[in-house]
Amino acid sequence: MECAICLNKINNDPLQVKEMMFGTGKFYTYFKCKQCGCVQIEKPEKSIENLYPRNYYSFNTYNISGIIKKIKRLIVRNSVASALGYKSFFNFLFSVQTRDGGAHALKGKAHLNSKILDVGCGDGSLIDGLSW
Image (cartoon, rainbow, N blue to C red; front, side):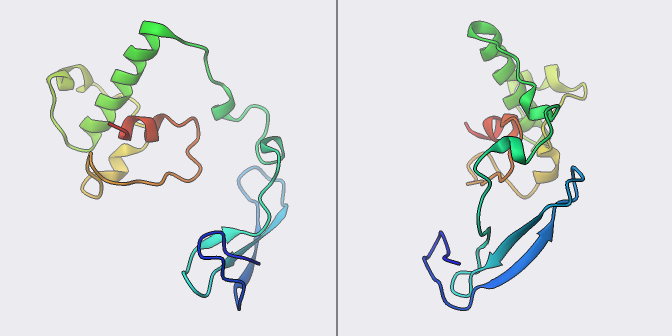
């Protein structure tokens, strides 16, 4: 097991993890690198279809383009900023509960200039909303 971060191969601790979210019960081997501490999967799946059911929400993307896409992005970004506690000219538009993609959980922990890694980012709307 070689660490993808620091390339260490010595004494990395394997861990067997059973998939529980979708009920497949499949086991995956993860390991923690002894050198840098990164936890990672030993052999990532080659096809995303092996990981998620066909009706998984992230697969239900809608083909939108042009001005509608820009408006949607503006709404997501401002609702994320609002959830993080930032004020803007558009805050009055987002005083109603809007979907912030979970950004409210980052309030007080993240700022608009924070560096964030979103692992398992679903449809990407939260990470897109956090990119300014």
